[in-house]
Image (tube, rainbow, N blue to C red; front, side):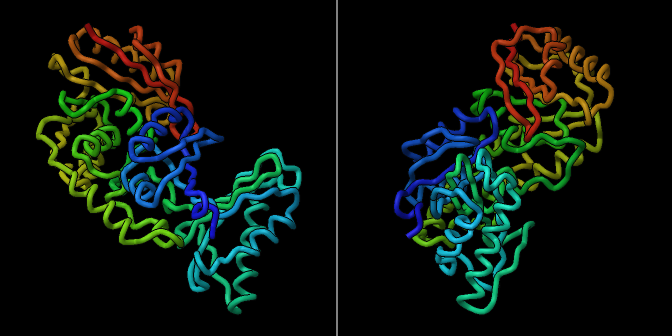
Length: 381
């Protein structure tokens, strides 16, 4: 039996700054004994809970099912350990696979690509020995993804049970420059504590990622609703019928999105075209209202509205002084025309948040991929 079968323990990868909220989300979905670790957290779960996390969680990047954990002081021992696993339980010689590796503080495996290559060689040699044929490597879309993590001469080799990064919801049909990552957008919506009872407006919506994530939350659309079936269902000990039951239950919980609840605007026509195309890929996504408009042209915002925004900066805008001027203008707009509202502003370039000219109720550091940013909350009395 593989390690995940014996211990019922898995690993959730998460982005920097998402630790508490991602763990809380998984615990609400049934995860037990969550324990923080480097770039994520370990958790215990039965197969139905793992299925539910992969299908519905919005804040987890990837779910790994550990196959084996072992001391690893040399590349030769890494190769021999991988060679001893029964790969025919996981993979066929006519299928494809890929290996990702992360190594640190392990002198014998300083380079992650080399470590991944040793595992790849072991798998290919195993199949040559057993069947006379070997599976192919497909980095872009493998049938089976594997993840090797080596730190302080201790290695864990896992299957990517989620089948790639879970930020890929499947609704992004079109894009604008430097779009917001989906999991970051979901985290921002979660941190606003918006529950779908108050109007939500994004005045600089770009390709609409923030509002698509909000719509998925309000309409209870599972994060994996548009994704293909994950590799989890092919793993030993996982019943595909159990996955289907979890999926069906989550799908039954979906509900219509109330018209007029969510709206977005942007000064750029191409942004509205992209946002509309993306939202319409979602079940009920046509309920989001889009319009081309400069926020400075809005006379007054209805009190009680929750405003969420990721003003363009850097790549999306150009010169630094333009970005600072935009943030200042948006701050003036919030002060003068948004009385009685609450605003949540994400700045991918942290110092820009100060240009809003308002003291935030709180701030939260959140990464957009590898880029550090900050979310600020503003009560507009």
